[in-house]
Image (cartoon, rainbow, N blue to C red; front, side):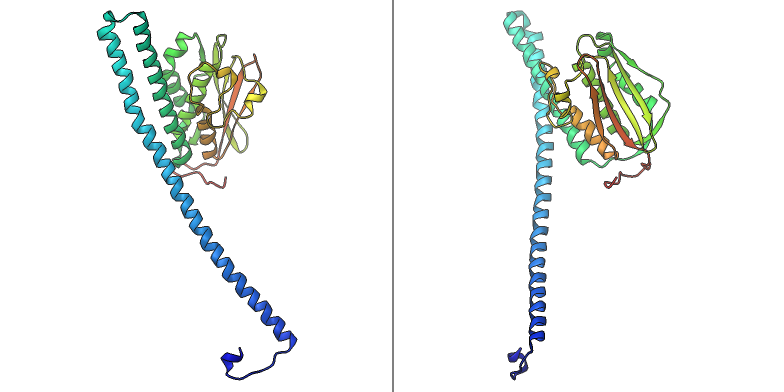
Length: 283
């Protein structure tokens, strides 16, 4: 200050204290500015890495699907065209290749479904649950018939505002899980609807083997596999997709189950969603 004024002058202790405070505040402001700039750079780097990872996952899932389908097709043609030259072991190898290729395709489709559920913003419309359940029943008709399984009910008249594709995907996963993991004694799957003041609550209930309590706690985690699912082909992503769909609709998913008494999985979605809009992430 003496240099700036061109002449010396004296400061009393109050002025010195004030200058100390001002200096500290200026230093803090400069430091905060630096930290904010570094934070902004870190956030941008994370966004870029997220986009890179998402693009990589999409690319891998897309690029691997075609070879897997080709492997399945060629192994089937090999068995059909050259089956007469193959012994039972050779035919068994062809069948095993086909099963593994099918499993790979299913896993890649599940990965794409999970990425879509997590990253794609939902588009809401008025959805008739009766139509959704009818579509799911049609998709699973052969598997239900072969397993002597009833799918109930068929006449829910309620309409909800939801992303129709995402809702079908979630309910499809739940019915698929029930068929695959319900056990040999499971013969009934029920799609239900209830509601309270804030949510529509959809459920898929079976009368199968149930899930141990210790397995149910992490059921919706990515790649989670329970002991009752061991030995059955699956990706461990089906219920993770259900969780993402529920959260994109402002709700949540949960399970109620006991061993040998069946399993009920619930998915709550907000009632105040607006047709033609997107879900408010703050819900």
